[in-house]
Amino acid sequence: MLLQHLFSEFLFAAYNLYLPEYFTSTMIIRSKSISYLKAGYLLHLMTLLEITLYVFAFQYLKIGEWLNAGNLFWKILLLLPFMVAPFFPQLDAYSRFQNYKQIKDHLYLRGFKIRILKPFIQSRCQRDAAMLAAEELGMKAECKQHFYEQGYRWYHLLPDFLFTHPQTLFCKAFWLNTFFAKKYSAKYDYKNINKTTAQKETNEISFSEFAA
Image (cartoon, rainbow, N blue to C red; front, side):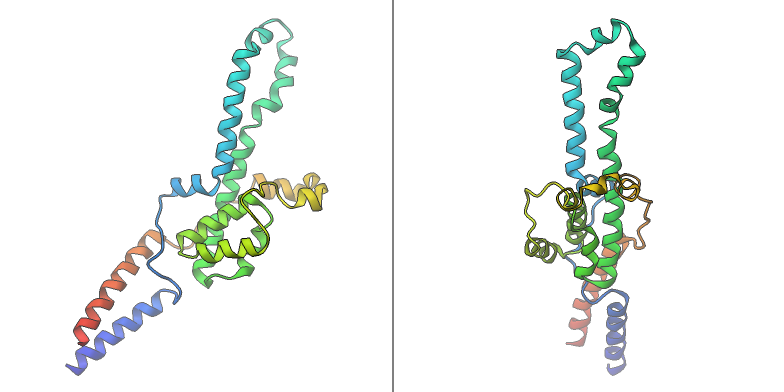
């Protein structure tokens, strides 16, 4: 009986070593596509709004007839900035998804640390990505409280640099980080980790029953 009890305690300790101590069953598992949509939901809405406006403009302003009236090349050149505009929010959304994966890995590995969020706090879209990562790891309350303490509210949509350093718009680094972030591959398989957590909780119950 003593050996069985010691064996159960050993297995319980092994599970505790396998997962971070702050990790709980409040973890939310979503498909990558759902996480992608949620990480940049404002940017996806912006794309849909722009496309909708262009469709209405094309119909009611008779853009098609205007194009057929001649000088097609120059007219297309004039319309080109408006035609490519919906692609920029999608490039931004892709970059924010990379931020989300990176933040989630760091939060999972180190627990909730303010320094992890600091590089992503000055942009609404990056804050949304950070909030999603924290939510899926059961740390949403801490993340939301931190943003609130820093003075950010739901209506703060524009990035801070537009008011403090507007010249950033002309920097190469801004364009690369905003629209062309490098692909980040998640270091952990959270779906399988969640299964392990559920198994851990089941074993905790069986261990306690066994020990009793």
